[in-house]
Length: 113
Length: 112
Image (cartoon, rainbow over all chains, first blue to last red; front, side, top):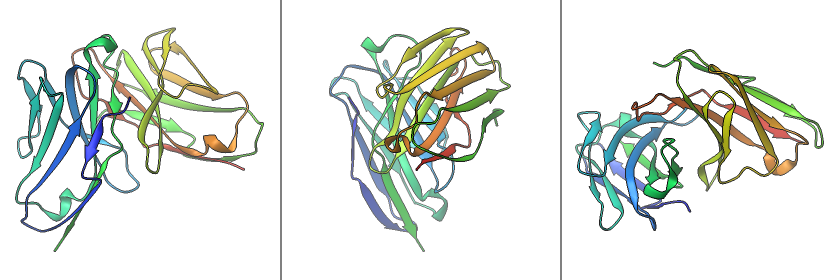
């Protein structure tokens, strides 16, 4: 079952902040965040692991609430280059150890000048 | 950037014909994945591989088969293409303890 992302779309002006949420009905081992620009392949942003470890780009922050099976991606002081579709991918505890991800439907972020 | 390519990049085919998409990676990654991307659905896993000759189904595997005879190549076959398989197909790979999935550029498949 796909994780649920919210909002589906958000429009910002340059410099504004945004939060994208990801919620799963299953116990999670990790949450991954990817960004996809129009016509391009998804690109890894960061991973949040059960137990608190995070790895990813320095300018992007995120949180992972293991008990609620939720993650949030925080985009601060947005730049035009932040525009794109953001996907969360979840790795469940019951899913085995093959780094298999289930992706949400995505959040379209548009940053205007 | 990881070296992962897909071929062909674009293909138009007729209903009922077989189609094979190829994914090639030069990173010696153990794990490889095939996704399809459709508007409103995000990325959905079709099949994945956890080693040579080791594959398993994803969430939307009906109508698709895969093969992996070499570490670097992962093939996706549509035995008899249908219009519902019109989509953009992405391949991805990752190594053990790497976490990050590296995506190929995608293949746009149209079934008429």
